[in-house]
Length: 400
Length: 32
Image (cartoon, rainbow over all chains, first blue to last red; front, side, top):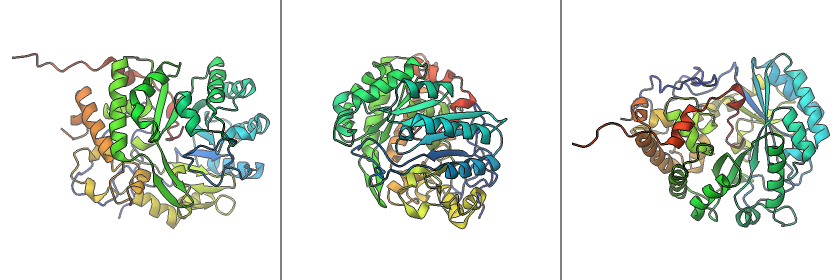
């Protein structure tokens, strides 16, 4: 069986994605070209979890049980990771810093980590991103992130009544005021953060209200992330595919109805771009995910953070093996093969060339990676709707 | 017979399709 060594489609920015010569019926249960493990990892995109600690205690946190460990990435581990990543890649590098809450690292240590990364990738374009709850972002943080031209994603669930109920601090107090203050500090320094809103049964009935709220509060891009937890090896699904399908279609209708060309709903806009032939800047739509690597605070390596609650998906530790060894191990290759395999049940779907079976994590949520993604009904509804809205997209993806 | 020409793309979607992206945009993790 092929391990799919072809590079994923459209990796260069603004490259046009193409459905490619993918057989529809014959390849069910097979690894699809364009997916799978790339040993050269030329476009590896690493994420560094500086800590698993967090100052919040979100009701849906997928890192439950690890939040107050008080453990932070050591300089030795950071240097080892940077050295391995730099030595196994070439060209532009994007580093995503997150946690836990990465700002718990403090500005002094964080600035030191940035200096070390600049040295590790000297002579190469280096871009930074951070995922934060924004509650600790003050002038000093905003200055530091602005100085390094950070792309920032801030977690914000919506208006105070919703956010405070879902995202309390460790004492049970709401954190909406602090998060909004942090976002304002970033905006004052010229950083327009993307907002990531976790979608729960409490927020599901309020699709239109949420779109209006984000668009009306100076935010330019929001992503709605259905709440699923994987704590201590146990997976819990709070928002299933049917519920998400109803929510996201209502969001879609409201988004178009508002008519605000300066406001985007991330999943919808990236999906529209992909369907129209552009490269989507969203991992779930890229058709391949073996280009990612997550480094835990202690050097553990996972192929995706969604799976980091499942110990069997840990590829090993960067102090015990090289990155190349970890990513080419039997365990890694088996996982990447599994991820790149189109579920049997998808073989007759007219959208298979576009969807490629969906996100492997969302397939796991449906009970088995051999099943269609738990978001299948939502995705199909969106594909159909966008095909109506953007002429030629069904033909482009062989779905006409 | 009615107008058979394709309906225009909604302005919000049209704007999304016109977005110019740079290398900096290519961080594409689901949570970032």
